[in-house]
Amino acid sequence: AQSVTQPDIHITVSEGASLELRCNYSYGATPYLFWYVQSPGQGLQLLLKYFSGDTLVQGIKGFEAEFKRSQSSFNLRKPSVHWSDAAEYFCAVATGSSNTGKLIFGQGTTLQVKP
Amino acid sequence: DTAVSQTPKYLVTQMGNDKSIKCEQNLGHDTMYWYKQDSKKFLKIMFSYNNKELIINETVPNRFSPKSPDKAHLNLHINSLELGDSAVYFCASSAQGNYGYTFGSGTRLTVV
Image (cartoon, rainbow over all chains, first blue to last red; front, side):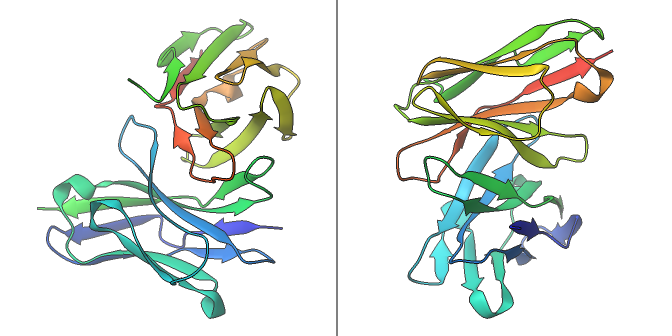
């Protein structure tokens, strides 16, 4: 069965430091992968997605993610974290077609940013 | 203009009551979804509709009944509410051939 694992439930980084959030997936075919961010009391906003091609994808707000098939990973990175990045981050994999499928989410990683 | 709007944003109700949550999208998307986020922030799909047709119906109690009067609207009706139904319910939509969901801001349901 398809699944997504985010090993880190909670991460704290200092403002200005680099960030890497881990995501591992289990999926038989070539996965469609996503990172979403959820600010407190808000819905989820798409940061970036990987469908095919270049394994390093750029997203909004200065985020990037790298797809590594050999490691079944899709880790999210940002070179310098801002206090406004404090939020919940979700990795997801798409299953089925775009009309009949669904997104399966990981458990989420809470990012805390220290001043 | 809000792309995916849900009402109400907060809903507090007693056990046994029946309630509805409404969702509307103005993006012209073909597919709409209901996701449930539990207290541990885990997100799980409940239902999806494509052009008013039910596509996904996960293992959800029969007390939950989605209704899609047209492809821009997907409502969720819940009968006989239970304490365990307390959660945040998110509506989302996606375009044909595009997995990039647009989410609403959620409805926090509290059953007391």
